[in-house]
Length: 307
Length: 136
Image 1 (cartoon, chains in turn purple, green):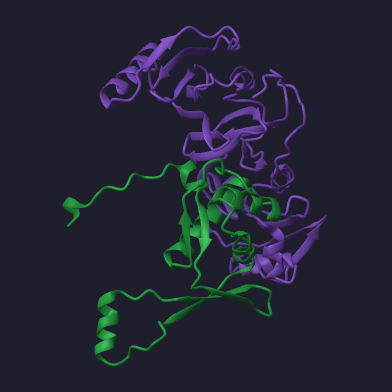
Image 2 (cartoon, helix red, strand yellow):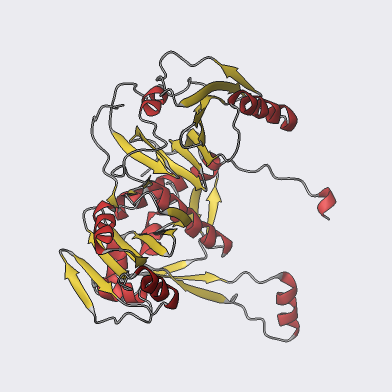
């Protein structure tokens, strides 16, 4: 693998964002967990969580080393930061480590951001050829918080930017169908993706409206015929009687209406169908921003890694 | 008796992906008017059920058969099984043809092949030396 800046792609999951080589693929995703692969072998692993209470980096590293001894797996050794790895901001506590098993080894670091209280463990696998030289380049682009414009999600082939208030609650990555549900205090956003689009549409006469109906994306409250075209997308909006929301609006003397909508569109070049469904969203502008940010990841050619 | 059963060594992921699916000779395939493949395969009956059926005079010279109609993606995958391509090569070719994400292609193809294998429609041949990820 070349160390020269080459084609890269964004990766963002559970509050962590970075740029990774375009040849790396999303392998396994879990709550606060990601495993990336290169040629069907693990190349990078990531675990992250927000820490409540005291966090001691030396104690955490010691704990990791002890876990290895107990289970008979390779023991983890603290090590000085490799000189090619980047320096992290002063509000971050960072400790590097390495381990070596009979066939595979690894190097990584534990990063703790004092301001956000987020601890992240990143490790790079060594399958006998040394740790990928892309490790330093990936770490240079590592972010555990960033501006609102940064993608909050970039996995497999999808990316989206949601307002920071939303939390990922459910996700499902099945062959042909991805679904991710985010929510925040009564507001809900669901991102959907289907592939291959040509096969899906062939079963519905090439009609996105029929596909939405067939998939059961519209609730009974929404009339199938009450759609409108927004550029190259199809959109439905509907009202839901929500007593709690009505009372809250009365108390705040604000409009009781909130947005319930579904927008679905076809990306023929990528052969994907994308949809965004929102329930109880505060405003139309947020819906527009989410829809515009949601798309297919483009592997950027020869874009250098930037800090 | 499970006690004396020999444990089969589990295949690694790479070894499983390097296996070559081979169509059963007992399976016949024909294309329907809709352009998809319909498979006719012999039903594998448990020996005691076969014996029971024989006692009741239900046994015939030809074994019972079942039909399975593949969908469009199943048809595409079926056409890629040529006894030479590995599972990995079929998944890669499927990803190229349908423009799905390689990981999705791998998951969909392996699930489909597992289902065909369960019905006895295909078997898995071990990878030949130097043919680990070939084909495509």
